[in-house]
Length: 146
Image (cartoon, rainbow, N blue to C red; front, top):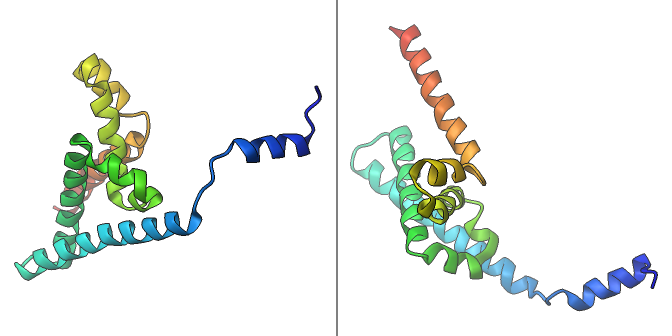
C-alpha cells in the first residue's frame, strides 16, 4: 500500500483528537493572566513595604519561582497545566516547573547522578547558565566598582 500525502493527511486527521481551540485559548489567557496578576500583587505588596522597584521585582521573581516549585512538588502545577496549557508555560513559573519536574523525577537516582544530571534536561541550562553568568558578572562589576 502506497501512502500518498493526501491519504496520510486524512489518516492523521482521523487519528488526531479534536481540540476545542476557543476553550483552550481562553483558559490559557486567564490562567497566564492570573499568574501575572499574582506576580503584580506580590510586587505591589513589596513596594508598599519599602522596597524599591528593582528589589521588589527581584523578590517577586524569587517568590514566584519558589511557589511554582512547591506547587510542582505537590502535583498541583501539572493539574493546572493540564487544563490551562500554554498559560502556565509562558511566565517564569513555567521554567521553574520544568526544572522542578526533572529534579523530582530523578530524585530516586541520587543527588548527583540523578538530580544533578537530570535537572539539565529541559530548562536547566538556561537558568543555570543565566544564574552563573549573573554571578560572574556581579563579581566582575564589584571588583571594578571598588
